[in-house]
Amino acid sequence: MVCLYLPGRLRLVQYVFLPLLIAAGCAQYSRSILSPSVRSAQSDFNNQNYESAIAKYQQLSLHYPDEKKRQYFHMQKGRAFYLLRSYHDAEDTFREYLKTYPEGLYVDEAETYLVKIRSLRAEKERSYKLQREQIEGDVRLLQKILEQDPYNAQVHYQLASKLWDLEEYNEAAKHYLKAGDIDAALKETELIQNRLMIDANGNAVPITPERQQEMEQEKNPLVVFDVHSYEQRMKPEVFGAGKAFRVVAGKVRNQSSRVLRDASVSVNFYNIRHEILDTQSYNIGSMGPMEVRAFLVNGQNFDNIYNIDHFECLPFYQ
Image (cartoon, rainbow, N blue to C red; front, side, top):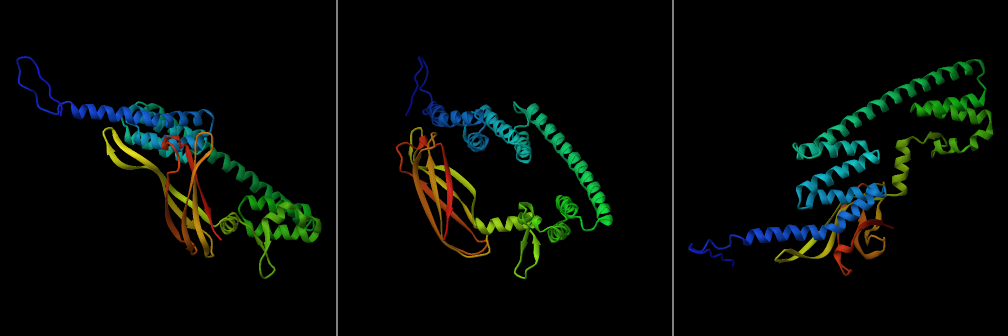
């Protein structure tokens, strides 16, 4: 209880200053515990480790007590996406800033970045159109050559590669096969072996980007996504709350067409020197094709929770 006496006046209402003192203390406490994260994020940004910086700026933009600083962290996240050439994510970040802070400190800069992104996208579309027109012209020329010289293996091979660039995969496969029939040595080229496969019926099938993705999914079937991290609060204290462990939660998807046995997720917690502070595992069990399961682990085997700089989630299965 806090009471204030003034000469010649009645005692003021109790608790006048206590909420203000607590609020100021909480803000100062939050700044002190987040300061290592601020330094770590800026270090990652300066060292061009933008992926790590983005994750840290995201948390700081949500939880830092000073609004001006939150605006800065939000913009830093957008700048990092832009420098990564992840323009779609950068655009979303700058638009979110303008929506959240319509009168913010960095409105002009955010709008400038959006103009740059639109310009880059338009330039990319123009470049793609010109490139496609050039490839289409090459295809027409090679087809005319084959009309005069239909058993030219190199022309078939070049035509197949041009058709592949135009995403005409089935037609490209025909010319790759024709080139190999005329010149057996071409069948052994890395390009043809990477683009054609033999199916169960003995037919050559093009390995399209979609099919390549399916093959990768079968090869690496378990993926972790939608990961979140936060500090678990245990009991209230005067300036905030005690934090006992770091919680990491997310989801796992079996993106393959087969059943996976004994699936699990192992989470490693690291300090800024990339030394492991703790490892915790979550056992999922069997997972059917395309099944999604959630996981949650509590990192706690370390002296100080604020020594945690980053973590990684590693899926396992049999």
